[in-house]
Length: 348
View 1: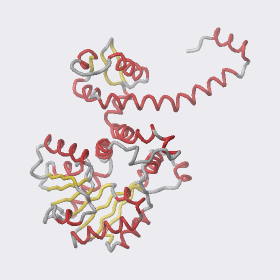
View 2: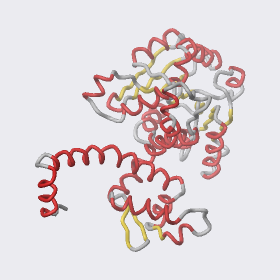
View 3: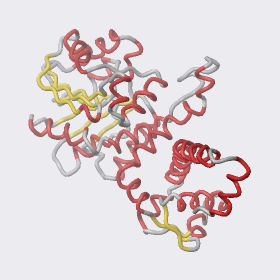
View 4: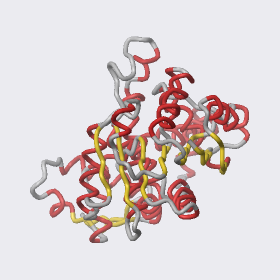
């Protein structure tokens, strides 16, 4: 809303170019500052169950919502009012419901916000990491529970449908998922089917969250998860005698900073533990900055937080070389470059 009397008064005092400078300042500030603040506000409301309450009841009454919770109503009101201004929420008195943008976030983008919250400690300590005052995984840690949640949520779009199709096409019956995280992939595979699933993950936090989901869906007889190191060959062998396919969903790249030999060694151990079985590897594809600048997508952010957390990325061709050197036979390859994803079906 422009008051022309006020505008002319400013021009008289500062000159004709000053309003243009102010507009450029405003536009640049809004682009970055608003996205930053809105993201943290949305993450906070997700974490206190605010959006779950809206999904359940269509509206949140603040006085009712904070009852029995140790929440600061003044801060909650400020956050909700800010998100109302942005169109994420609608407001009637102290009752809040989803705006158009909020409906989109709740339906499609929750995984993105969980990813941001999972890696937020890195960005909050970015100056210390940059100046070597702190080290990732020594002084600064990602939130593994939210990594597991986010991976499960965004996997709904491409990874889970693609891998389910591969498993169905090959008539696999019992799946071992390495680095299972929240076990959402196994739950989706086994729910409403006759499949059985096993999962192993080194994160106690992720496995505990997975167990809660398994119990919630009453799938404890067909989905079993445990804490363990996928590099421990004895542990792999003792999982089950009935495994006919192993899945590795966006896990191998986490070990690349330790050297390609480390990944090859793992693949050889898997081959030794499950000879003549099949392995399905889902991985992120590496792109050069010039390509990402010409094709701006969220892959750029993916590359950034993987680099900050010391995870590696490779091209599909480089992955094929690793599989070959580990003695695995490539049976099928699927790529979705627009999402930066590659899928490999391998014979052990």
